[in-house]
Length: 347
Image 1 (cartoon, helix red, strand yellow):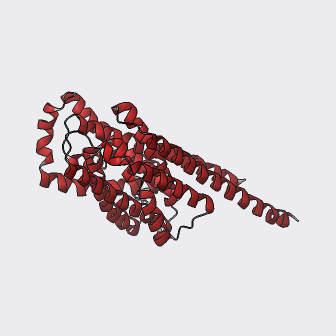
Image 2: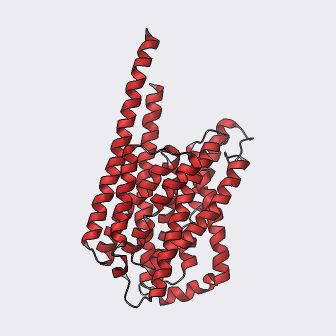
Image 3: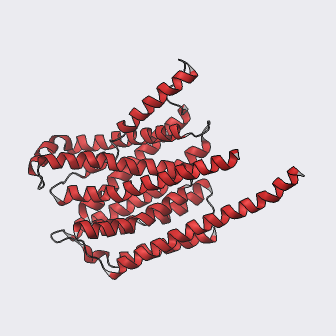
């Protein structure tokens, strides 16, 4: 009963983190695109906003610390993680900051529907790096899901150039394309590395530690982007950009605040899904969410919707269902194998 209760609790947390990831990965690109569509020009600022919302979780961790201190005494440490996990998370945070900067080029130079297509390549990178770093094995169902999701992205890529915004030079469009592809590779590397941190952890990874890892990732990611903003003089440009924003100065700052909040959902979802699932599941979820983001881009920003986009959404849904079906089948097999052993123990 205890194991069953624990399993149900893990599945519930995993489901909540999947929803959180969905909010972040659908909402993040859309609000970033809103910033660039109405007069925003600062790529470093956009990437900085993806990391700077970490104080939200600092508040949660402070509350959790005082609860632990009541039960564990005054010697209770603020951070559960060891120095090893802190160092690994800090190093990974710099990679996350770099990935955020590269990813910001997509909404800046490309339609949401196009940048999400290119970013779908992260699944291929995740599969390769997950195999090399954490020895992730593919089942027939997960391999089928990966193929379907990549084919869907490839079908969209054939029509990507037709989405080049009017007035956007070919050079800028290509630069946005290349930077987004590099962001996909960086994310594909970061996901298995995060799973490796969990695997090598010297303590049991609790949800509190998951929040700590997220906070450290974003502290060092935002530090990396802050350096870029200082060099590019983005801080000095914020007030000027706000006064020229097409939707008004108040809405400019509102967009910035909500960008910082929504992007935190994506990071929280990633660290949670990897902890309670795997880096492969996280990569598949992100790839599944990308066509949905495209559809929202079409609805909200009136971007073109070709038949290939509908095909990509269908293939993504098919691939995601295939993966979930495979996981359910595996879970059933494990239970069937466990039942005879339990009966033998009772005899």
